[in-house]
Amino acid sequence: ASAEPLLKVEGLEGWYSESHILHGVSFDVREGEVVTLLGRNGAGKTTTLKAVMGILAKRSGSVMFEGRETIRLPARAIARLGIALCPEERAIFSSLSVEENLMLPPQVRPGGLTVEQIFELFPNIKERLSSQGTKLSGGEQQMLAIGRILRTGAKLLLLDEPTEGLAPVIVQQIGRTIARLKQQGFTIVLVEQNFHFAAVVADRHYVVEQGRVIDTIPNEDLAANTEKLHRYLGV
Ligand code: ATP
Image 1: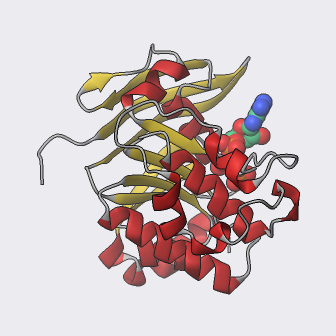
Image 2 (image 1 turned 135 degrees about the vertical axis):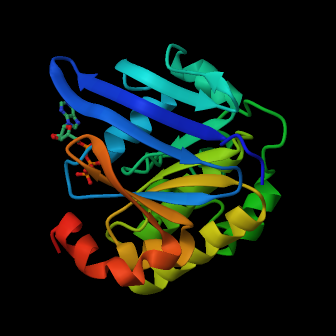
């Protein structure tokens, strides 16, 4: 493993106009790792992903990607470096077909997957190629939303609660897909509420509370820390 993390977030602060939401988030991810941000609703996980992606306008601190400071770069420039965000609301265009949805994001770097390669990862959506976005199930929409960002050529994927509201069998499928993406060399930051799912796919977990990372748990220590996690997550 290389010494330098692919992504190093340090003392990240963030605001929605006057509301100060992030109070110094720090975590890092090495190339090829999957890490999660765990925490209660409103802890600041989504806001952290938005700040890393550069779509949270008001932010400070440090976000180093491949050794380069991105905190002052606009989102477009950050995307070009190879970071992509799959938002919680999935943002599938309902009036467009599956294929049209897939073709939407621009390829920002070489190395983006082709539509064929995306269908290899998600055979279910291939069958729905000409269906409209609205006709897809929640699970199919989630797969399309993840598939879509793979076209960009990003090597760091920020996935915001991909399992939310999905049936257990679909959650398992998404878990297998994340495992395959990791095998293919993608690096992933995953926001999750479901830590049973997180345990299957991640190398390490960062617990977010009130806009800070308050604990770091290696995946192998997760089982020994379930009680603590229940407390953190309020479950
Ligand atoms: P969730 O699982 O609910 O998305 P989260 O940990 O991702 O939880 P965030 O969405 O990052 O939490 O929200 C952190 C805080 O920021 C919350 O108090 C929320 O109310 C606030 N917030 C989120 N979006 C906005 C916004 N657009 N404008 C103002 N405040 C916001």
